[in-house]
Every structure is written in structure tokens, then in C-alpha cells.
Length: 394
Ligand SMILES: *Cc1c(COP(=O)(O)O)cnc(C)c1O
Image 1 (tube, protein in one colour):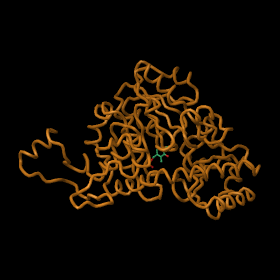
Image 2 (tube, rainbow, N blue to C red; image 1 turned 60 degrees about the vertical axis):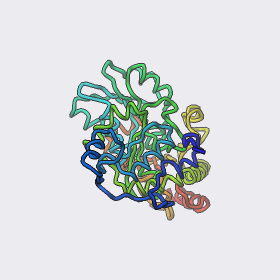
Image 3 (tube, helix red, strand yellow; image 1 turned 90 degrees about the horizontal axis):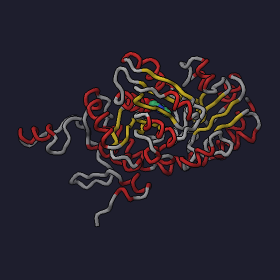
Image 4 (cartoon, rainbow, N blue to C red; image 1 turned 30 degrees about the vertical axis):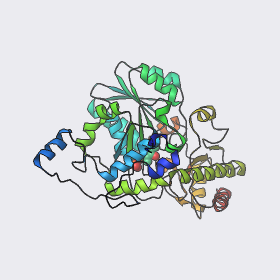
């Protein structure tokens, strides 16, 4: 019986989606470290290049291992097409650049990963593309920002670092009414807890560096969407500008996907407990975790996410207290990454968001006392003890 792989349960897609085997029948996915491919005849090369015959041509265009990763992630996301990139930033850059040309306009939620903010503030302007930032939780602000030349909306939800959540469906409706496409950076939610395409987004981007690897090894990224937008907006730019993912990294990420569901569910369980430990300790002025009923957008979260993710943010009131907290940690690392099996915490004002001018940081509520913690897979008793001790020291 032929199975329709699109009907598989999430866990089955993660383990078997996209699997193609060589005649050796290997169980673990093969790693094809090859740049190019040989053709039986000159005519076969001609047909391959013209697209008349399917098949691989060159690693910059595609590779069998990378294709397995793309197919697996596409199945998981419910996307017609996935294209892998060398990093999350390559994915964000191409996802935006492919939708605009000189004279166009982008609207973006103002709480964004630092490098995404750089692309919008420092890079797009060089090509005559204008950008308006909005408070992503304010639907009127999205509406008011629209201009006749608006072609793309970008939002990160939950956003870095304070986990602000945007109603994807409502913002998609505003984008579509304006003739623009909505791009969602879904890194914090992971494909396990939120499906932006099903909620109305046109394009989803990932840094696969985060939870998809989840074990701190390689960079990677992905762009997903319907066949039409993936072909019209991205096919040529991906081929000719060269942000291709290395097949080795694709293989690491493909194997990472097999355990993604197990890992992020356990991480979210741990994060929820750690958020409670921090809230009940009393030292933090505010604790933000998308799985808590006291999150400012709890109602939206209930509508569009099936889990809170693994990142917790909390305000210790001053930079000094935040630093004392970090320096007192014995298990949790001080590091700016997230989604890893190892727990880590960072002080965004002096690390991930230091290049953002202070007035912009204050606009998104990022004062000096905030700590962002990515909760890992360690025993939650050990993590609770470490965090409680550090809160005492703060
Ligand atoms: C890390 C991250 C990126 C960039 O990904 P890289 O793989 O580091 O290039 C983009 N968006 C978000 C939300 C991220 O956390």
C-alpha cells in the first residue's frame, strides 16, 4: 500500500519524511558530499539543464542530502516547498530580498533579532527599499503603516528577546488586503508549536541553527512556502547568489529533526517549571514565558501556539543584578545561543541587542535588568537549584 506521507503523524514525518535510499538500502540517511553530478550522455545533460528531466546539477542548486532535509521540513510545516540556506540570516535576507525591488516598502515588527534589524535598517535602504517599524502587537499600527508600495510584512513571533506575540492570522489579513506577503520568523516557536502557513502567513523562515540542530553544532536555515511564491520570488536568487546549505550541515540537521519533537517538548516542560521557579522566588520584577497565563498576549498564544517554547525572559531590575545572576550560575552557561540541549542565559542589552540604540531598546521594553534564558534538557531539579541560587545572589 502506498502511504500518503502528508497524512503521517508529526513524529513519523520527523523520522521518515523525505527519506530516499540508495541501492545499498542504508537505514541512516546518506551524506552526499558531492559538488556536481555526471550525465550518461550530452543529450542527458541538455535535458537536465533544460528542466525536461529531473535530477541534480550542482550543489549550489540542490543536493540529495539537502533535498531530504528540505522535504522533511516541508512535510512537517505543511509547506509545498522548502529551500535550505547556509544560516538563518541567509534565509531572512533572501526571504525579504526576493519580495522587493527598488521603490518598494516593508513593514516589520520592531522587536527583531539584531541582524534582521540590520538588514532592514542598514541594508535595504541601499537598494531603495523603505522600512517602517511597528509595535507588532498593535493591529492598527500594521494597518496604518501600509503604503501603496508595501510588498512585505516581517514579524518574529514570539519575538526576541522579550517574547512578544503577534496574531499571525490578523496580520496576514492586513498584509493580503494591501497586496503584500507576510513573512514569519518562526524560530522561537519551532515547527512543533506553531504553524504560520496554516494561520495565514505566506512565507516561514527558520534559523535551523537553533532547535532543529538543537545540539550546538552547525549553522543552517530554511525558507518555506507555497510553490508559486517559492518559484517566483526565490528560485533564481537562491541559485545565483549562493546561500546554499552545506550537505554535511544538512545531514546533521536532518538527523536533528528526528528528535526535534521529543527535545522541544521536554525543553518546554522544563522552561515552564523554571519560569515558575523564577516567578515564585520574588526577586524578578517580571517573568515572561509564552506558556504562562500572565503573559500579556496569553489569549493569542492559546489560539495559535500548542506550546510555550523553551525561552524565558525575566527582569532583575538593573544590569548589576542581571550580571550577578549570570555570574552565579554553576550549570547554566552564559551564552547568546538558544534552542540547545544545554541551558544558557544571556544579558541581551550587552550581547544580542547591544548594537540596537538604547532608545530602540527602550521602545521594545528592553531595559538593563532583563535576562533571557534558553532552557535545555538537563534535569529540572538541577536547573531549578542553579537558577534559585543565582537569583539569591542577584
Ligand atoms: C538566530 C536567529 C536568526 C539567525 O539565525 P543564524 O542561523 O544565526 O543565522 C534569525 N532569527 C531568529 C529569531 C534567531 O533566533
